[in-house]
Length: 393
Image 1 (cartoon, one colour):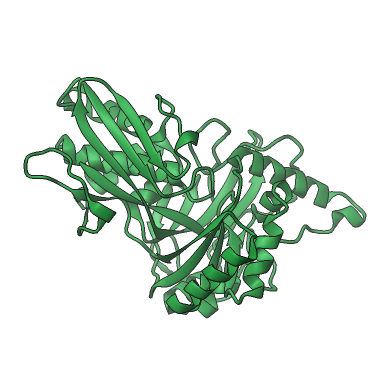
Image 2 (cartoon, helix red, strand yellow):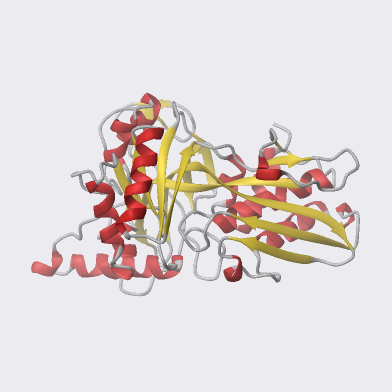
């Protein structure tokens, strides 16, 4: 049984202050991208994990693998009798880079969930799968859903967002990786430094899209109206409180900060209603300047050459450019497909990244693409077959 799962970019990632336990409040807008991993599960005598493709050597193969953890969580939720054999072979074919801010590990976990749900005939609904996903990692629930969505809490409370049109992106993959907990710790340090009196107390720049001149949206109201995360129409700003970012060692998008963050110096995160209005309009030119990421200054501080990548995207005419999640991938929004191809060629030739990919969004969430009649997983050249989402509505 084979499932295909998308990468993601955060169109908004607003990070609130750390609480007494050191965790952060988050509000984010997820957007799934047509850059896919494929996860195949097969009944076997023993459990195993095999990973091939992009960054395969960096992916754990034991019980710490997120796909394996997702399978264990599913068995725990349904009961050990759900297995149809003593073991399960998991094969992951990766195109999503590892530790790149694109939630590739969470995507693989979502793929394992929907594939096993089909293989074992579990019959769990999307909501029930989402509850299992929340036990595995913050971004797993969105990888199940796909499309464009608002994420609250650690990002695990996900509500679909109204978004029109197709968006064309160029992803610039960095030569290196960034640890999510390390990026959150750097964010805390930068904010603590900015809160100090004197010249050092000036707010750190960054966070808003590279091509925009507006400050980051994290924690501030934005004009316009949108639907709140519950889907109700709202005017003005909808203050959406997040939850706790996950600590180091947990397979979640959040990260536990280093000490030094000062509670009260950073306002709670709020959903950027101007960005939501731009998504509803389907106009990439309106969306580009509103992309924001509160973790971007921290990611750039840890990998300074990202400044060159972001500047190159601006120079070559991107409508917006941003570090995706905790980085270090940079995502650039293009006007259309032709502009995306030109931008990809320019960035590749500029030598400011390891490689580039031109992709579109939004993309569907975790989807079963191979359901052979004989029950055995079949190969899918290029994954071109029509897929279908898994789980009862």
